[in-house]
Length: 192
Image (cartoon, rainbow, N blue to C red; front, side, top):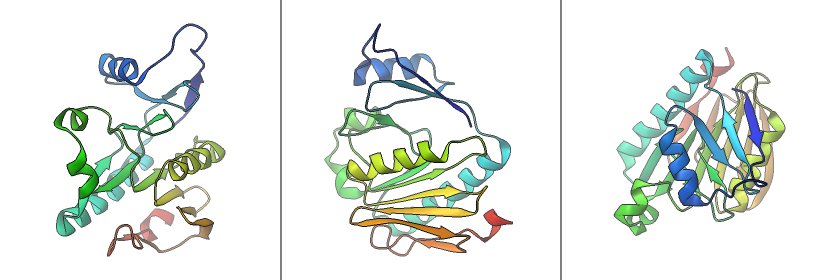
């Protein structure tokens, strides 16, 4: 998936509501807004990335259904981060307490919070540095655990709120640790 960043600040300011309206008017476009108010336009993913994203979301969703401790989200869900960025991670999760604190209207739009868990899966054309910047942004906005999965280089960068980034080479699995207790993501097929 390739991305294009447009600085539209000289002609318009995209507030949260305006950005939501822009996304609603262009439902086939995958759009994000970075903290500087720049519009991020992303192309659709390729087949392999789409397969793996679905597999990861399925595993997270099944774990969540079994444990019922929160809500899991796919890549089409928008989050309004505290720093003003509007992001859509490839997979995300929040505890029930956060979900239950939202009003019905808040649940309908981009969720006004940062997920406790996020996962980003790099496509072959994705910039690793941009992925790392997004992960740092999530952590700086309240995310407790994040995975940046790089199939091309067979690496996973694990982001935690209280520790430095940990890079693992070809791990066979990832643990949800104390954020997604009992969740284990098998990665063996991803590397093959």
